[in-house]
Length: 77
Image (cartoon, rainbow, N blue to C red; front, side, top):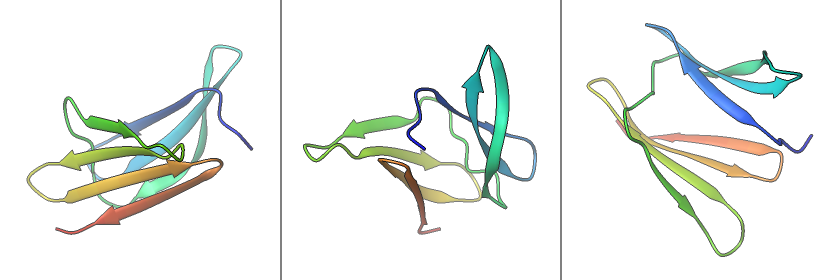
């Protein structure tokens, strides 16, 4: 399913992904069992339409690759 709107949310333990439908957040899935959110994330759009979002905090470091309807999480800390 292509996303017209995509949002992420983190509580103190996990990170979730949501879509927005009719003004409401609809939980799609758990992105990570750890809190990966970062303030002011760096986002890069590649020539082949990937959206790369880098994150870093005290516990984890890595990036999320969003391409078409696929979301891939890479953690290296």
